[in-house]
Length: 64
Image 1 (tube, helix red, strand yellow):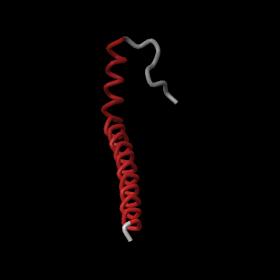
Image 2 (cartoon, rainbow, N blue to C red; image 1 turned 60 degrees about the vertical axis):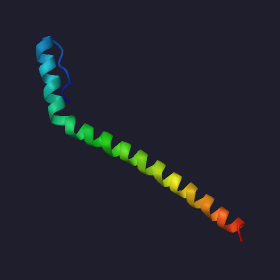
Image 3 (cartoon, rainbow, N blue to C red; image 1 turned 45 degrees about the vertical axis):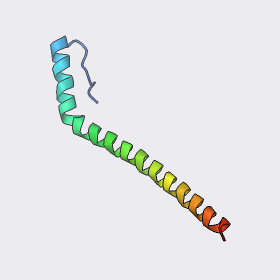
């Protein structure tokens, strides 16, 4: 496997290599971050919904 930044390259060559890598992999990185944040939000939303349903069910049971 080739090193991400090869030793012995100039600073400009290394910067260009990083830009190229980000151009190739940036969309996948952003998609992964968006999917991860969406999953966290969805899990939190689901837990809040479950808790709300539980509270409503308890209130309905106690009112009988």
